[in-house]
Image 1 (tube, rainbow, N blue to C red):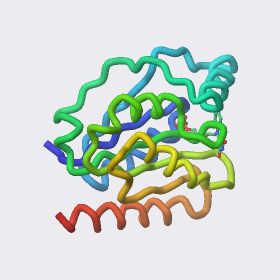
Image 2: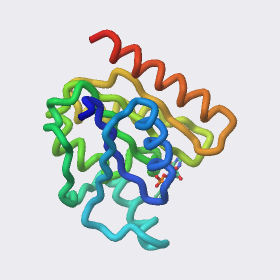
Image 3: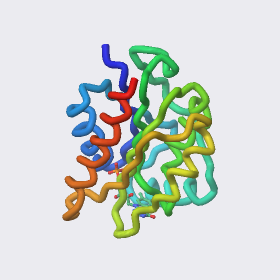
Image 4: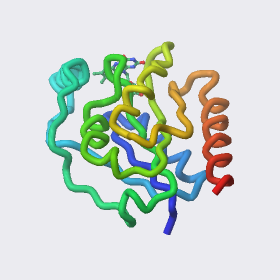
Length: 162
Ligand SMILES: Cc1cc2nc3c(=O)[nH]c(=O)nc-3n(C[C@H](O)[C@H](O)[C@H](O)COP(=O)(O)O)c2cc1C
C-alpha cells in the first residue's frame, strides 16, 4: 500500500495522463474525482469556465482511497487550469478535504503558454499545510518532460527527508 496518493480531476484526459506518468514513477496510488455536473461538450465547457470564474463548487461523487487522507505522507493534487484558476472540481475537493492533508504537492495541466503559478497559492488557501512541490505542465510542449522530471526530483527530495 503506497503512502503517496495522486488525486486528480480531468475533463479531457490531459491531467489524467500527466498524473498517471508521475504516479507510475513514484509507485503512488491514483484516484480520480468527479463532481455531480455534466461537463461534456460545449455546454460543459462554458459551465466549467463559469464555475471557475465564480469559484462555484458542487458536491463530489463518492470516491475511495486505500488510507485516510491524513495517513498519506504526501497527497499530489492534480487539476486542469480553468480560466486562470484551478478546476472547480479540485476546488470542491480541497474545500472539503484540504484540511485533512498532511503534506501536499500540486500538478496543473494547462493549454496556454502562461504557467498560472499563482494558482498554487489559491490552492494553499484550502490546504493549511501548504505545498512541498508544484508544477504546471503543458502537454506536448517542449519543456514538459523537463518540468515533470524537476517536479519528481522535488517530490523525491521531500520523501527522502522523512
Ligand atoms: C473552461 C476551460 C477554461 C480553460 N482555461 C485555461 C486557462 O485559463 N489557461 C490555460 O492555459 N488553459 C486553459 N484551459 C485549457 C486546459 O487547462 C487544458 O486543456 C488542460 O490540459 C485540460 O486538462 P484535462 O484534459 O485534464 O481536462 C481551459 C480549459 C477549459 C475547459
